[in-house]
Image (tube, rainbow, N blue to C red; front, side, top):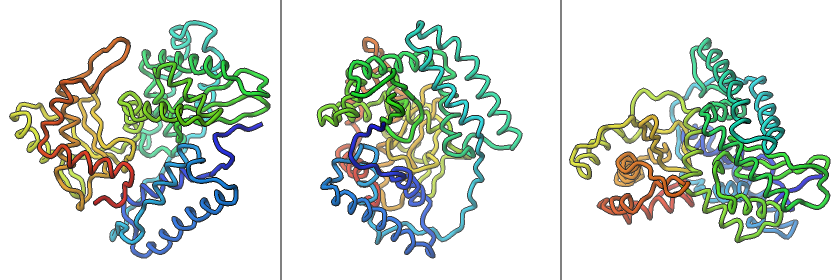
Length: 399
């Protein structure tokens, strides 16, 4: 038995769109421009043909596939970035045992969640997680490299294990899985023969539902860590009945600081080491000095500054409190983008450093009234916001 959010399944579309994003960021070799255009046109046309044959539209696709389609559809194939130099690809490392440990970990969480307090479950699982991370670190060290060389599935497993090596996060992870299972049980699908299996981790989709022998199998992105019960219930409704209202609630959470911060932390684990803050177009160190003089009277201590290795679309920037680090999406490192847009994103992240985090009930608040009051002090605030909003909808090209 199989469950899905739509009558049509689009295998590989999300993965293909990510590959296209990375290729656009690196630039397309001139000799392969025609092939690149054809691949995009063929994928978009095949999807649209399949939808029409079923009497459907793009709105009927699951959210990850719909976002991938909209991204591919928006690419201007006449103004593609051209790469003249040849880049030596990084040789990826695949650790099959790490992938098996990921499945084992997910199974153990499902086996133990709800049978005993989350703290006890975390205490039982934590030593194994720490040991696995240590083993991978030693393997990578012996190769003289780091986590950025891990292939996709192995890398995501490693990033999750490292993220959950913090005992408090591991407790929250177990609690969130347990709460989601309760929501899924309350809305049990017809034909189910056993309790749901919930895999929460560094996934390529936001949420998904499949089934095997009548046992529903849910996949959730780790960004739902500590999400309110109302949001988890909305995810279940999205998966079972595709309710527009539930989808809007889940989308709001996906855009929240809580979700995007977790996503950025996981992605940062797999970023290659950066020698300095210089990009191909902009130097973040130089931009920091300008922003610091203009808005902080030169008194802001400089954090670590770096561009992301990949063009991140989910978040233009991120400040990591523990590392005192500002990461800016390399999507913004482009000559056609006005400099003040990069200045604004860096300024926004520096305001996180200035204002910190505030506990509001049981939630951490990042964008406080004081934060917002400072944010609108940026000289070209409205213009920068408008350009970033357009880029969020149509990343390539920006104008």
